[in-house]
Length: 415
Image (cartoon, rainbow, N blue to C red; front, side, top):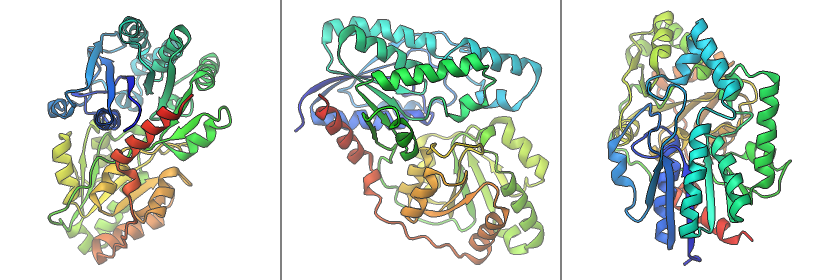
């Protein structure tokens, strides 16, 4: 039994929100209360939700106290206004929206909500005297609230980075002016310098932050439990989750189109199914490439439904970020795919953290975005010859129960 701790976690993404940022902290929080932890979650009262899953509310342990904080943000009343749509539809109105978002809301559009979290925490702490505050970003504005709380109350503060900050692909896609870029760098450095400890989810980000501080640990997103397959559909390649403008695998579409023309077996056996919030972008891509017969857009599904889908797929498609210096982003779906014990076809930037995990644990094939020959060759082997070399190694270290225990042990060791 670990030492009893009173911990508060400030995290924007929480049930019934079902975006990818939810599952890591939902799982860790549920595990922590089994270790005699008094746990409070501070989250958004009126979040901008792209996808909702009401069943997730039933997965929050009753011992967890959840407090909601209201906050205004740009386009808050339009939950369907996906930022990736704004990147994709390059009209003058969207360009103006991006400029305002980039340069007037620093570090992000949730900055007003984060300030409200600060005020809420000040009231809570006076009554509860928490031992540790964890701020989890994105949105990284929440770390500024954590910084202020540490200075005001002198409690231990953990800055938890589920994704990079200044090097994050969303930031690099925004029309930031030089002054704004410098402001982001200053704020990120201040957070890293002042936090009692920094937690990241990828090796490359850990190595980058270690240039600034020695107080950094890595705890990956992980998976909740293994997904047991009951049958195998011999035809479908499955992709789950949001598909963004920055992930577009141009050479994959070309390969599918060419193989469907060149090989009757591929034409009859191949099907790519997209489940998630892909919006207008993916539909336009499919139409442009003339591959409507081979790619299906099936929309957002609840987590339980997705688990059933991936366990019955022949293989699973993982797409990284098709931008320079994006090797430190590991998408959470990698671990869900891992739990399903199905071969992964991953396409991403060269020499990425995702590539290393797939190779080290024999999870499938990793191909760089610019390697059309290998993309096409792999599709041909998997969907015409049925030649899939897949022999995963022990993945138990990525079980979130083990990650939660290691994370909590690190908190207990902080002086």
